[in-house]
Length: 234
Image (cartoon, rainbow, N blue to C red; front, top):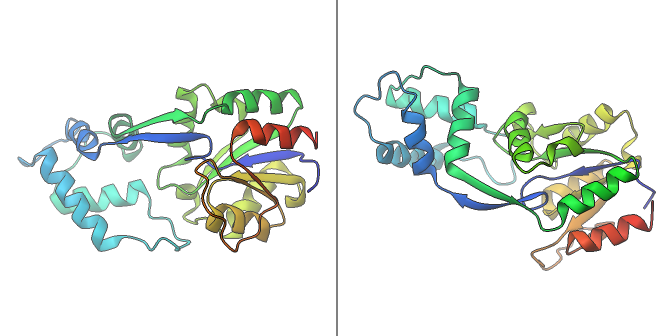
């Protein structure tokens, strides 16, 4: 591996971990913004959302991202419910009520240490929520200012491991991919995609998964271990 000039990070299970997913609470909040809810309850919306998800679910290995905006438009058009706020507002309000995250243990110390070396950093995530939404969550934990940008697959409609999402991030940094480290927790998307683009692929394996037949440049099981690795190259 080369000395990194920049480091890119995955989002969920890398920078933050998910503690709660409560779509009923999210849909209850959304209906507060409805122009006319047609007498439909939050429970009925949640049931219909599960049904719709089973009908249109994108295969796990698909490179196409089906976004929150697209899903909600389908869901509420089908129910005949309209809203007085745009989809961007609805996405955030649903997220606030539905999701709860905490920063990964030790991540703030790592980002502070990397910033002291003037390393440029960004986020590249597979997520149906927009980069703006992920930025809001990072700001909530006082992590956003460490990053130059936050890219979500929802912004491009393309998911990792497709190389275009990685090369777009490299272009935003103005660097060759070989100058960049990518850190993520998923072998099949994060590590495969990074190595296809000739980035150094660092597997953040906090959950101590068994290694598959997928090559990585390094494996770490904690952010403390990652910092020890990085300091050998900085």
